[in-house]
Length: 90
Image 1 (tube, rainbow, N blue to C red):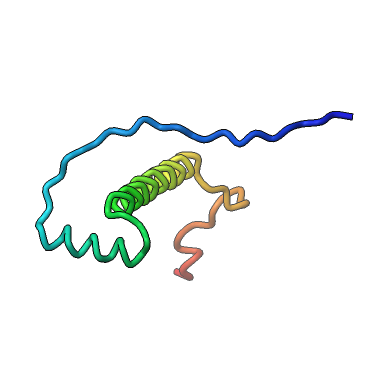
Image 2: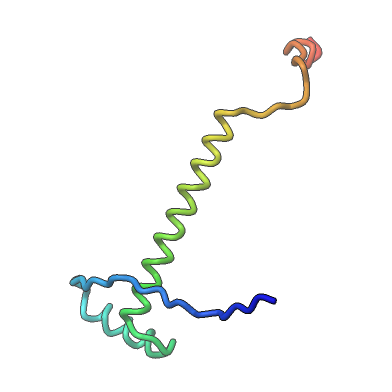
């Protein structure tokens, strides 16, 4: 019998502070919204930036997948296509 103890490993990431310049009204309104959501302005901005980056990466992956699929092409199952005039009854 095999016994396995599950250990939760916390993911540690290096953090770096940045300085940004925002209008005072924007900061104040952001703080109010963050407080209403039970979070901090810092966390709210970090989560939004993470969402933007995640969406950009997903878009890039989907775009590359579509480009790769276009390069391969699509097989319709037909050996050959009928002439254009035949298709349009000319």
